[in-house]
Image 1: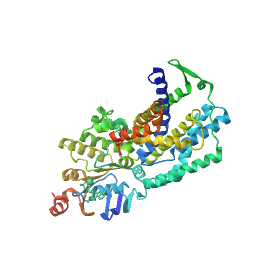
Image 2: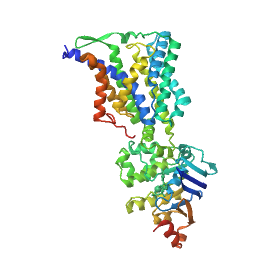
Image 3: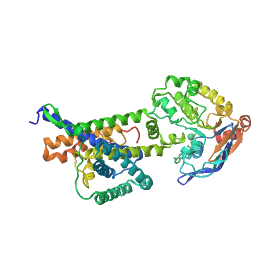
Image 4: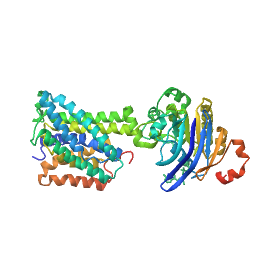
Length: 228
Length: 291
Ligand SMILES: Nc1ncnc2c1ncn2[C@@H]1O[C@H](COP(=O)(O)OP(=O)(O)OP(=O)(O)O)[C@@H](O)[C@H]1O
Ligand SMILES: [Mg+2]
């Protein structure tokens, strides 16, 4: 579904991503792991067209996305949940959802059924939500775009274990429906529970790929590139 | 005489009337500056062109009402063309380049107006319903000035409604809150801001045609309001609807009362007010939600 080939990103003169390749098969879930500053967020931003200088190819179902502006990349079928969540504070919860609404499948009714806690808060300002609610809203909002691929940047960061569990159940359910998932995480247990394939990113390159059980068998990878 | 309540009430209405015109002018300039970081000094030129187009439409059709609709539409179209051929390519340019290019446009506008409409001063006749006066505390006050006040308030209410209650308003707020996330959700932020720019142009054109019956229409009429409008934007706080309204009110009143109470210092008064406001609140009266 998503195919990234030989991706490079520069910030000024620093070469942050140095030839990264990665595929997300249709309906599959792929995790991208790495230490702080490894370049995980940068990779996702490059997919969405949000970095100034990049090279390489990014294709969604065969269609090249490299030359499109971010809003066209999103409309091609990718939904992005940024690390900061990116909830619009001057929009109500309802408006946060409706501005993103596009296509059919996920409607307001279905979203409110899936996220009952948001229903109660539909008229609250986006800035008035707790961290967990903001993460739920960011995911719900991404679903409203009816994308085929969901990209999430550290969705569990700073959340209580109970909420992390809820998000895990939610994403597992979404995966069941055939939605493709590309997940950036530092929470190893969360990532390996959800993802079919795990990619370990270090210093701008993929250092290892495999599944969760295989990762447990290579402690040197975990030590060198994940620091746990 | 100075504390005569009738006199004060009349001056208050005059202040409101000026504030109303300044608001129509400032809101477009302020929002474009605040949202897109773009300094369009030719905003006053759009006001002048609105007045002239209104003049031509009113003369050729005999209908002030038609002029009131045609001028903003024509000016919005003109703004659209300007944006596409010139301003869009200047958005990434340095503020100094933007100032120079749009300053140049002022002179292009001035010469174009002279070439098309001649170097004379004109007025627009009012329809009968707006031509008379009404009694305010025993004095006759022109209905048309009350109409301007009402129009300003109506535009303020409509813009507020549009921003808070419509989809376009929500898209614009999302783009202002977090432009990148909005784009990554498929929102064409550039297009939403372009619509806002065109609306701002239309309001400048509306201000021009509305001002035409009270202030005469002449080449250079834009310069006399441009400075006041810029001051309104600066003291109101760029990028804020409320700020534009508040700034227009302060400057409208300062200008009007300055002229009648201390005529010798009237022109200094505005700058004194601006300095005082900026010393107290360097970012303007109302802080826009985001930089
Ligand atoms: N806008 C920027 N300008 C310059 N350098 C940047 C910028 N954003 C990130 N970097 C640098 O690029 C590298 C990769 O950053 P990135 O944010 O992609 O890492 P990350 O893997 O997402 O880290 P974290 O786990 O902390 O979120 C880091 O060294 C960072 O300092
Ligand atoms: Mg990151």
